[in-house]
Length: 447
Image (cartoon, rainbow, N blue to C red; front, side, top):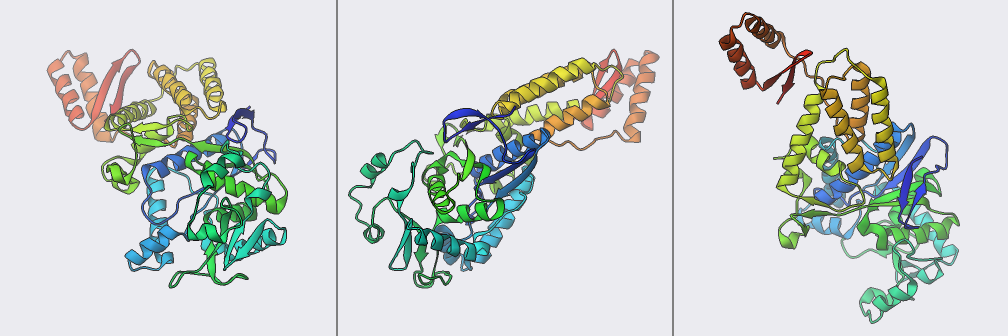
């Protein structure tokens, strides 16, 4: 049985879906005002790998990941670029799709956009007002945090902790609130800002309300899994829980999953440090599958360190797996041996999607394959395990010219014409073809 580390309970829990053989999961997507950075990519890759393993295990996955296309950062960037917020969002949504495709990330079942859910958002906020969980002041609408049950439990915080941090606030927004902890559900429009009409005047939604509305509208009041980066535990996911459960009276998500951060050369990534790395720029020099391999093969909850050496190692390891996959099939095969690898892989990935242990099993399988165990059944199992990590190798075949050269080399060796045999080997090496002489005959790999 798959076990998931649930952030809410801080414990490993058996995964029991709401519906048999089906997983409904919602993963917070990017705010589309720029190209995604490697931290965004880590989240996308981590949850894509989790999704792929659910599918490997036989589940149908409804995978929803949103685009925040209405936000202060988008409005600011659009003004600077002399574009409308929608046009700017369209540009970077297209860039996101291109970058994630290069990383081998499967398209979501749906990618909802905030602009398309405005009527649902307004209705959702009105219900919260009607139930006494929210209030309007000067065109803004705020959520009453004090009325929320177990607020901030997800982030392992208490109201008392938060009240200490909120004491002494004097900004203009705080003056409009009943309590400094209350958060915005709807923001009144500023001059020349994009806005929508509402019962409280023209404005736009707060950040947190967007995901609650899109999740409950598409997947229902309760979902199996809600995921995102560890930085979203508070306040974003905390506020999602508060407003969703206030409206529906039901548990918002049964499991909460959060991925770890990406450091760059052992330092936290930030623009001020000059180590801010976008995927768009990385893909100019790093193969997308190599970058995916680096991001996917670490445990999703642990922080990872992006370095040139890490990318170099990922490239070398991926090459080894590719060379193994493209080996010619042999008659020798051991079904019992394969079954053990399949069980070991399942045990590793069932344990909170432990990618580091899962990829170790794959390398052990590759070593076994290189010892001569490689029939079609083994190859298909190998491919399915690799696909969990987004690794899909295209079939590579030697063309007739190369096949002829290999045959000529074998004939030359049989006649003890080693000079000719060595020349053919060197010519093939120049074409990126490496020959391996084994007891089962000649094998080859392509660099």
